Length: 84
Image 1 (cartoon, one colour):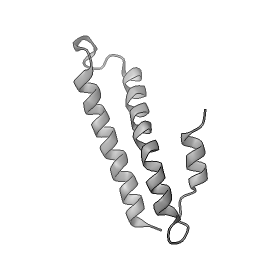
Image 2 (cartoon, rainbow, N blue to C red; image 1 turned 90 degrees about the vertical axis):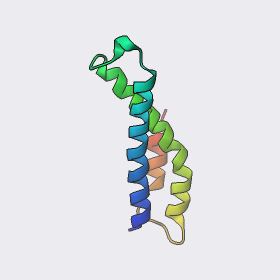
Image 3 (cartoon, one colour; image 1 turned 45 degrees about the horizontal axis):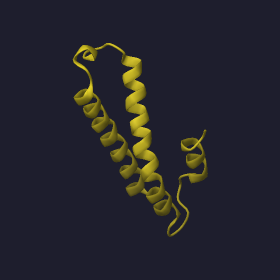
Image 4 (spheres, rainbow, N blue to C red; image 1 turned 120 degrees about the vertical axis):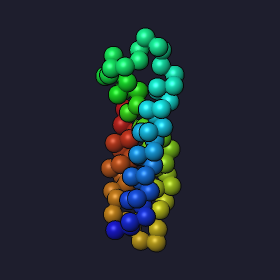
């Protein structure tokens, strides 16, 4: 098990969620502040986080395949991220 890869994925996931929440709070309208439209805010933060994670899939895939195949099933991850 590659501990660096696991810590890297969790750190990027956590930082991207925090950054996306701050981005949402910065650009929201004053009348949307507070706890109104929670479902829309969750969709926005999750879609922005997904966009961050798709950009990091290639370096994660390369790190997972060298020097020996890693513990992540990258074909399953690529299919789930790029499903239409």
